[in-house]
Amino acid sequence: MARKGRWEPKERLSRNWGQPDPAQLERLQMSLLRKQLKEKILPFHPHYRQLLSDLDIESLQRYDDMSKIPFSTKSDVAPTADTPDRPKNFVLQPDQDSIRKVLTPFQKAGMMWTAMRHGKAEVRRRLGTEYRPVQAFFTTGRTALPTAFFLSRYDLDILHECGRRMGEVIGMGDEAGGPSSEDRLVSVFPYAPHLAFWQVYGVGLANEVFTLHTGGGRAMGTEKILRVLEKMRPSHLTGIPGYVYHLIRQGKEQGRDLSSIEVVFLGGDRVTAGYRQKLASLLKEIGSKDPIVFSVFGFTESRKCWVECPGGVETGFHSYPDFDLFEIVDPETGDRLPDGETGELVYTPLDGRGSLIMRYRTGDLANGGMTHEPCPACGRTVPRFSSDLSRASNQTDMSLTKIKGTLVNLNVISDLLTDSPLVDEWQVVLSKRNDDPLDVDEMRIAVSLTDGQPHDNIGETLSSQIQLASEVRPSHMEFLDREEMLQRLGMETQLKEKRIVDLREQVASDDGEDSSK
Image 1 (cartoon, one colour):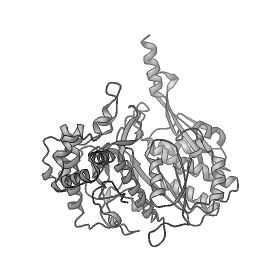
Image 2 (tube, helix red, strand yellow):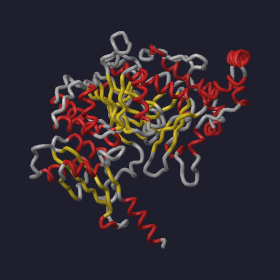
Image 3 (cartoon, one colour):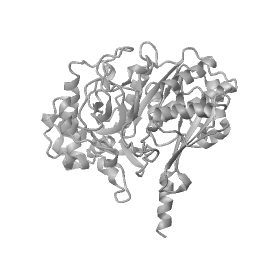
């Protein structure tokens, strides 16, 4: 996507990105890594310039050599009250002297030619276009302030190129690979400075697909979105899983004609096998023929997303080997694991400007790890990582610690309730008994049931299933009608529905405030 008068990102795999030569892939990726470190990271990156000052870049020849680069985590970049500007240490910050030192003779000649033809101001403008941050995405954590990740225009070009590739994997466009007048996309992601919204924007723009960004229930409202779906008749729908299910269910109950929807791709939350089946069944009931439901994966630190091949959940997320290098490591030791073994997903960018973080431990455990074998559905030879992801890090933050001394993985409970044919909507509330920070933890679960399900014995059934899966029995099971459940979740009012509410930290904080008075 060249633009006249601008320096473009370095040569990539371009239109053949999905078919790299497997025999040359390691050499290609390590070459891109060395180039990025040598020309961008070490000269311009405040954090890694110091951290990697003793690194012999030329020694990075094989994937196994990645261990020479230290891991990074969210805590390295997240701001605190004492260090509010910490994210800026991860932004490339070139100046005239540092740029001159890394320019090749060919690049120097190009800059001189530009200066002679257009003046030195044009050289400065083009460098600013490449490096100057023009947009920010934000991520939030349970124990940290919002963290900003910055993008330059160069990075936005990458975001759009990844959007084009996502559309290619999804199957947008005609048989010749060009835009299709038949494809229409509706996004129900909330308007916000987060990756999912802007990646979908890139998908629509890069693939020249007519796209409507509704802002979700909080902005346009479910009723208006349903009317738009009937009138616009989109082929593709995208959004957060919980809200998309709510939207389609409402459409079915109102007798809306949503039969045009063929493809639903979802991000921002886990997409389980049971959820896919429930949503696909709903779509079929409203007339969609053979609907495809699959997942998109991304995180703020990556500033791009990856998508599954529609051939099935087992195909995994298709990576972009000229942009990213993924590893699977043992979450305990950090040792690199071979293909096919379950471990933590680690991400390293091979290109980019703005905010960059190397060997980033995502905290996501990929069940089945990675594979470099060709995709059985589409034949692409890019590295693929499992779409069966769960949280591997911060387990104590996301667990109950005082119920029979058992640590509880909330992903297990979340998946069980999402997949259950008995449950329509649900919420888990973690609290302290009697609101006493020194008392035991409690887990209360509220559910609304699917139509026609009696309350008799369902509480016992669900409690027993949760106990079997997590070794902890809910302290209380509450049944609500759907409208009250939706209000508790904030389905129409929040950027993302409140599935798991943890009141324990609030209790501890309130107690701390009281004791200091």
